Image 1 (cartoon, one colour):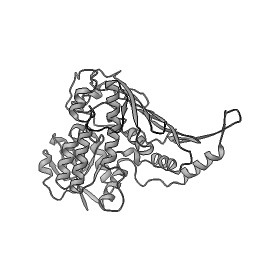
Image 2 (cartoon, one colour):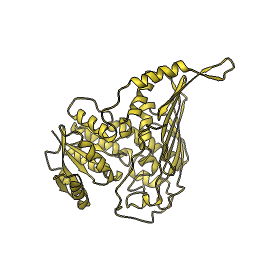
Image 3 (cartoon, one colour):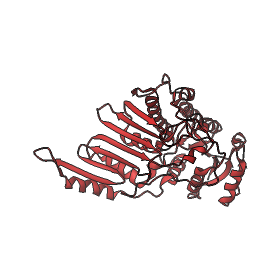
Image 4 (tube, one colour):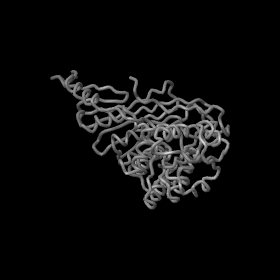
Length: 386
């Protein structure tokens, strides 16, 4: 039986608790920790638990019975909490984004290797039926080499969203929608498509004059083989229609699921390739659904990896690659330059201090609310609707 502790009992922590509770034969929650200790106590009560409640994570980590720590705190704390937990001999599951800088990611990965412990970064969108099936279709090669990818990470957040004390600042949140919303889709892109060789990007803040950070960015990814990809990250899109589209030389597939294939007529105009469409559709239909989706799916993978039953799908190296793409978008859009990958310690955005110094600041944060009364959040689409 694996003993679980959760640091940070804000809105996303509810999802972690519910995820762990789906596996009562494998794990149990034994501790909550929050600088607002009353919030941790409220979570204890809300879920009908009687676990230890801590205000100081250092005291909590002295508990030798804790096996795995879920970190659900603001991004600027992720490195400190993860490294301390790993050095205390605990496995770590940390919320996205992995950290505020690549330098912090590197220290987190070093701590995991040094202690021989698992470090996993939340990427719950991978653990959905549409995404797993889409990845499988790409891996079959039926659609041919990918020539273009289109990622629409469309979200909508009201003006008051950035009133929360740690949001909307480069120091505390580490960035805007590119880092904290599109991170899911950027992770999907690098998981399915691989890493580009060059990034060109622009960003702006159109609707949130209480935030230093961007509320929209548009990036072009260039790959070594000459193919391209585009990612739009936004919290200004009503309806939040999110999609991932891959164009291959033979066919197009996407989430939400859609398949289209074309053959060339003599004059070069397209005609439908129904045979290929049916072949791809049949492969898609034959894939079994996941037993668990979203956070629960990733938690299941982490628990199984700790027990040695399966490999870890999202480790710290994968988490770093996603942040590397986001960092390159910020570097390109802030400095007005094309950015070559991979990024190394010479990048002006490699450290947290470098990000704070060089990132474009849009507005001054005017309002700082300690906590919202309403704790309900949304975590995006599961790509099941066309």
